[in-house]
Length: 110
Image (cartoon, rainbow, N blue to C red; front, side, top):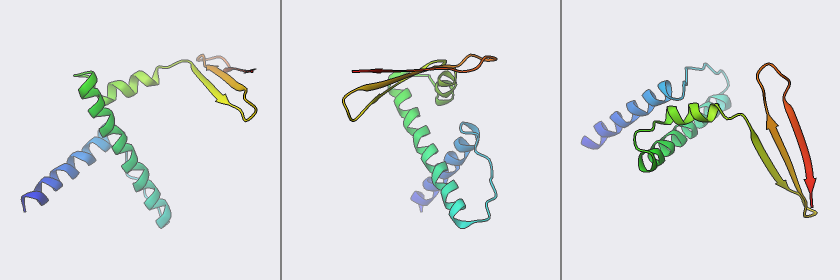
């Protein structure tokens, strides 16, 4: 019986975190496949949140998953390097500026 009570508390905590940290809200799907997909995506998001929380606790005590997610939201530049089948690397840099068009540059190197 104690295990069921503990599982109930864990479930309540999970839903609380989903609503607060991930801003998950009720979505009313009509098709069964969409309902299952929504539950699956919400579960994966919760797993990632718990993983992020555990990593933060070990490496950056006091840092919350919300603070980490907000910090990632401030990233202004992304470099992508894609290897090609012929041995070259395709490199792309995206540096968005608010109010301006997104600059996007691709180069290829051997």
